[in-house]
Amino acid sequence: MKLEPYKLQSLNEDQLQRHQQKFESVAAEIKNVDGLLQQLIDFQIAIPSWALGTGGTRFGRFSGGGEPRSLEEKIEDVGLLHALNGSSGAISLHIPWDIPQNAASIKALAAQHGLRFDAMNSNTFQDQAGQAHSYKFGSMQHTDKAVRKQAIDHNIEVIKYGIELGSESLTVWLSDGSSFPGQLNFRKAFERTLGCLQEVYAALPDNWKLFVEYKAFEPNFYSMTVGDWGQSLNYANKLGPKAYTLVDLGHHLPNANIEQIVALLLMDGKLGGFHFNDSKYGDDDLTVGSINPYQLFLIFNELIEGMNARGMNHASDLGWMIDASHNIKDPLEDLLQSVEAIKIAYAQALLVDTQELEKARESNDVVRAQEILQEAYRTDVRPLVAEARLRAGAALQPLQVYRSLNVRENLIKERGLKTVATGL
Image 1: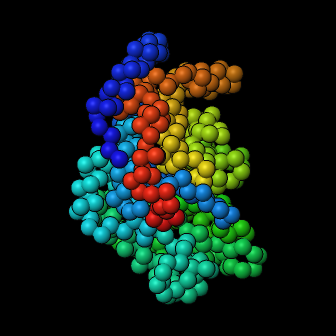
Image 2: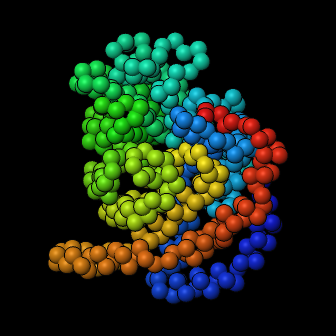
């Protein structure tokens, strides 16, 4: 479904006067509001192809219908999101779920929707039809060299697809680990995995980055071979300057101080990117900002401080992507909510008075430091985010427009009620 600009403009006009009143009230308190708005416009969050369909658990999956049946339809869905929010200008593909049959036509379709291709994602956590060797006992950590070579070859294949599409990064998430004590030799598992990653790293083009993702548990429950940020950083340091740690917000144990993790990774120049989601217990894949929006703000506060300290470009020097898969929400509505939450947290963090905060820290004024952070967090920045969307040619209220246009109903009419997104 393509959103015509004239229809969007008409819907915006109905809300414009009320928006202007709210925006001017907030903007009056902000120095260089135009500069802040430009930062919001520039800040784009990649949409993962697998989040466009209903996710699910091992207990069940409840499709809402109208899911994208092909890579082309996934691109169309992300294009619709981008037209609505002006902030979803990239798509992240998962291979073999999203193998492009004709890279030139796929690139042209993406360009029509104003999209680029973000990080490519490999898959050695599932056995595919016709696959020679099983990953039941791991991929890059496997005791069988043939299995390890299969995993290496797959990742190199993913890089080749990415080159064709104009991507510049590869994300490697490994489900490797063990579920029982004694099952695995930890040292040998690390060494084998490192050896495989070194071969993949050697196949990277000069301008590419390799993101090593970590996860505390699942599908293995006794150990994970890349189980935390320290292990990921160890791999990245051993691999070389093109290798980085990727932080998934849900891939931590409860109460982990993610703010401190990103601060230290930025300090070492080894933070490569983010997978945004939210969680209550573990890797819950919930809508960004739905559980702990204050933590998201604190994370962005550290990100901005660390990036500014290194002279980094907020929009382009790190990879920003949502990673979620939901069972009970309309996936497109959820993604609109997630992007909105990310932009709100980013805007709030941009409002932090960093000079006053540093003074409070240096004088050990704990109360003042808290007040400075919470003053920014408690500011209603939604009019700023909406104004940035308006200036980018998107919708003032994306979710409201999505529902008023009956997008899901139209997708069901077009694609059918029983469709299942590829890869799910």
